[in-house]
Image (cartoon, rainbow, N blue to C red; front, side, top):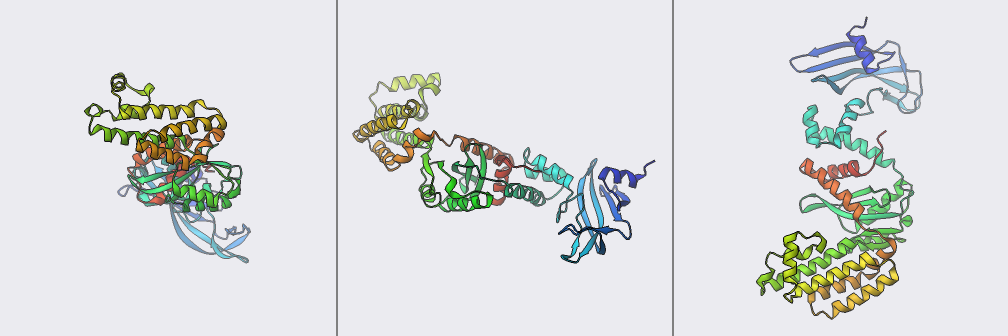
Length: 403
């Protein structure tokens, strides 16, 4: 019949020459303490090279937090041997229940990693009654190891975008594989150095900057400069949704200016920013009424729909180029300054806008990733520092393999 020590030994997988020496339960503190020892005269392996049959040099008392025993905290205590390797000197042996230098058992860490994608870290810390900095240390250790082992040898097409760890500030840049839809790099900042950092990171993952042939991004001058300098073989596609957003901004500028002299335009902002198919019945009726008022805003709205239609209907670069040039000619003659300013923007980014009709790339993939990241951020109510935020980005969207 099993006694307490034997029972816990079986449950923990403790094997000769290790054994459970004693089990102590402190009901007042709400803690279970399991003490492990080894048979006198046992020999162990070097934790550096694996050389076997080494005698014990001395011991060091170590404690690990284990999974709760029912509602009680559980700790493993081990008088851990240090072996003396002729080649590598004195080192603590590796124990089968924990990673080196960790204060938690692997089963405890596995529980934390399972919960980390489903709930805020602060909630996990409360659940297991540990400080959240210790929980973050576990997560960061596993994420760093899994990310380091990833290969980007097959990556050719990427998307890059920025996102914030807190509302309105503390930006990071995210790089995604457009084929697999996963984050392959995240770094603090949103300047041209982020592209240089990404190029350096490729070298650490069986890849090189020259293999990147396509980049989808917005019209950020910093990103443009970085790609030109550090991704020499990449063709740029400016995200069509970002381009249309700029045209919507021009439309809204015209509306705000015209509204000053025409009260009909009050409370009509979202009518003009939506496409006809997305309007509610009341909005559609209002648009129909405004369309008969000979407004500049109405003219720009029609120009926007025609520009959007180029993206939707033109199937190759040649046809798209003809349509865009015709539209630019119309915009230049419009005598509406925000529209003319948008036309100048298109001309200055012409190659990257036109390249969409060859690459077909948009930032839709990375925007989807960003939505998931922002949802995780909302659940967590923000992150204490950028390092934690980037760790969560990899955990949420890096498709990491935790073996």
